[in-house]
Length: 355
Image 1 (cartoon, rainbow, N blue to C red):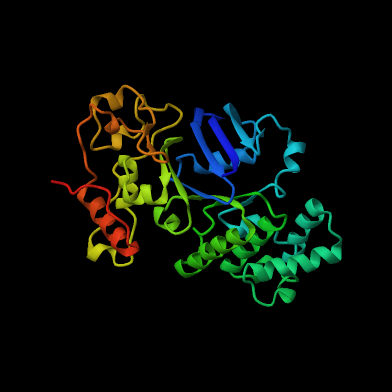
Image 2 (cartoon, rainbow, N blue to C red):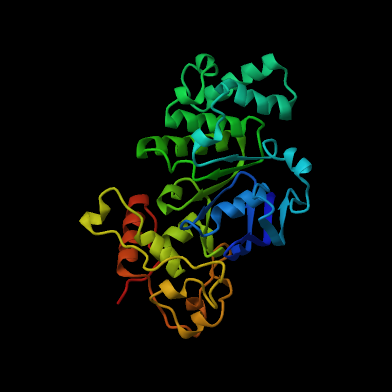
């Protein structure tokens, strides 16, 4: 497969009154053509900073890229100037933000906002851009697009505004689409429609997608691979099946345990991950998740674990995978969740039963 993006040892920090916040700490991942990679984690884990850095949208200062490379089609984005990035944003890499109402211009008609991208990046005439804007609104499922292009954002519902944002992001047929929690502000029904729309559009346009979310349940039917982030680092990465049916990092177990299901597992209470994320102005020594990890060992508080390889595509950053570590199985609530998911999607259960 053709590799479209390589992020290597990325470090991003912000200078604040309270000190330097090390928001992203040595993040590395790849993305292939036509693939969807979901980046999952709690608020403050570094998901949005990582992806905004790919587009160089973080304010510098106070932010800075302290180390690393971002290779897009083999070309490093990190040293590029703002003028050079303006030719990439929208045309090569586009982004869908969480709240379309703050991303759309309230003083401009929807059609004009789509047309701007087409005129700037595709050199279209006004008439051609108008026709294409109508086509794009129809493509993303907005009824009566000929009428809708003349309306303003406040005349659209929340779901329609998000569809309009997707139309703008896809206007120049970008090679990479970054979706930053695009369904968080929507109700469950509209959320499902938007996710299905993104899957359908990707199959038609062969666009690579990075999907950011705090909810593992959202990515189950959308992503090809998942990267779990915690404390500014990727702590586990693998295919969707590996992350959902054979999770190895205790933090991933916690995310699975706290994932609600339709019947809430027969009325059982949701399990919360105890404690709070680390203060990244002073990152903890050793494993950042250790203070919240019931399986933490002495070494977790002293030395940062390496990324252990489980399979060709599955890696996890935990000392529990060391050959000398005690054998620990996921908690009963996680095993129950995995069995339920396995029966729902007809997948084999990879974790062992807890004795």
